[in-house]
Image (cartoon, rainbow, N blue to C red):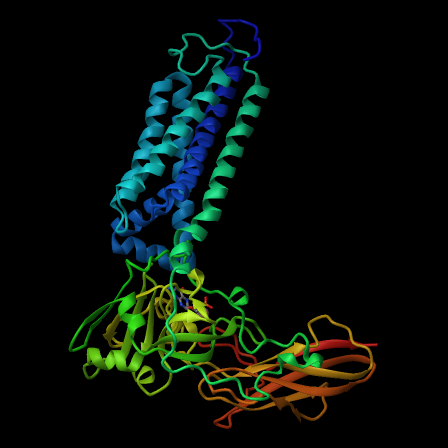
Length: 530
Ligand SMILES: Nc1nc2c(c(=O)[nH]1)N[C@H]1C(S)=C(S)[C@@H](COP(=O)(O)O)O[C@H]1N2
Ligand SMILES: [Mo]
């Protein structure tokens, strides 16, 4: 501490108030340091639970159902976020009180930090996936928090950490010392927490996933037909590739932190209205005859011309024979699937059993499923939007009825059945790209998963519809690329595309929003030709 004038009696109100406000800040910074250090040790010790997530999950687990329902209704999809923000606010209030307490009674302040660490530790240890080791990051975090609190408070009191409670506080607090100490604490919290969060999702299951050797498919995907992939044509540079690389694949889910499921611990239960309930390990699934299929999946929230869609070569266990083994009882019209984090999805039983390539995917484009895309197992059902078919981190399938159980998004008003709507998109010319007059090309993709695409037409301004050339159909579950050569004339032009599916139905012109069962309308792009 730098020298301060010793004026023992000068307890002016402002001098007193300022350190108290700063002490509250010290408490909050100390809490941040504990959390940051705890996150860092979650990574170093590699147990399953971060204290923040563990506390949040414990609240969800113990909260009465009326409260969780209320939160879901009020906060809609942001219910988990609301929980974290609410917890954060409570924590900040608690930490501020602890900071102020520490100013007068350092020992009690430390006790507050320890209490805070203990709550985190207890929640982590008692979590469904928790073990004793999972409590350690919180304890280490609390120790660091105590250190930070002592350090920060000492800059306010001028009394070094560990000295018995000061009887008199020097009145002239050196704000610069406190500011410096605060910056150090904030830096430590941010760096430790940042490193922890950054690596947690990567290292936790990454090694486990990398260790999974995918079996060869019993029934491989047919080779792409000649003319089945137009990406190689030089003129079509920029067209959507036939299969989307995993790193570019869109991602949609409600998960705040990506579920981390290890291979050894994985279990899938198939129950409800079945004759023989099954529990399968990952090895059980890998031992079965696997199929490999090129399938496009899409999100119901995708807008006209949007990119919440992607195609992959999925390797997986066909669902139909598996469910036949379980023996579906008559009347069970819904397959309610649940993910490890409690998201639910309802798929019509008849569609899964009608012979389409519905599967439990374990491979995506030649790799184990990426963790964000559902490692180790997800559902894929051609022809249905993701919210009614594509459960990631799948842990349970329950045969039930639509009238008995309402899945996550259906409860929020989205359509109970979600067949994919016919979709077409212009990729070339890219948005905002100017062209020079002369030979040009218009190109893109179209899908009507499971029905298949029969025709794509393009219109320039208000001209007549011209039929585009389609890539050879690989299978009706996969999108098709298309292109149309165009003699571009000078000026501004509006390009419009529409597709027709194999049932003969053409995309309607009238725009319809994505809620509640998928957007409709024609994709347009404007282009300047000079
Ligand atoms: N566990 C879980 N699975 C889920 C979801 C989710 O929120 N949680 N979202 C679904 C939705 S709405 C879509 S569109 C697809 C997206 O799959 P992707 O992220 O692999 O592209 O996943 C589906 N599976
Ligand atoms: Mo979705």
